[in-house]
Image 1 (cartoon, rainbow, N blue to C red):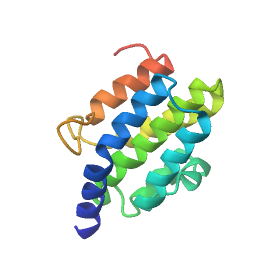
Image 2 (cartoon, rainbow, N blue to C red):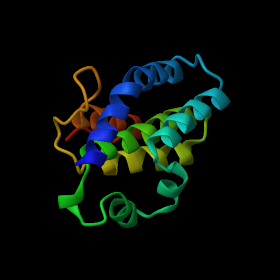
Image 3 (cartoon, helix red, strand yellow):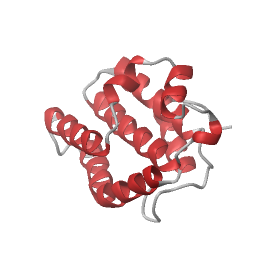
Image 4 (tube, rainbow, N blue to C red):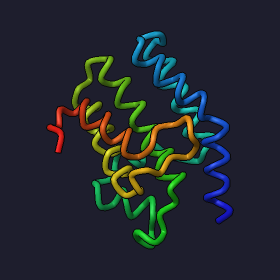
Length: 144
């Protein structure tokens, strides 16, 4: 429970920064280096390792995030990891690195799919379902 509370507090602290970073990436207001650096700072400060997440296949990624299975899912940790991968995917897409963008977006989608659709860390941030819909749009997945 302590870990979950800690992650929620981190998200509250970084919430505005995450939203601003998303808008800056979409508006091409940051250099790629600055965007990656900002994501890296948030990942480091929250104890999440994007490099590790990128090396794992989907099954291992979920096992790494929740070693005891679905009962072990920390929604805040899952949401934050997915959001960081989402932002990295957006930036890679802006840079024309389509394979890297797809890989990060697919990982974010996978992680978010394990959360309740209406789960969100705070009222002004995207819910799991909202972010999934945005990712599917970016990936060109037809609406279901």
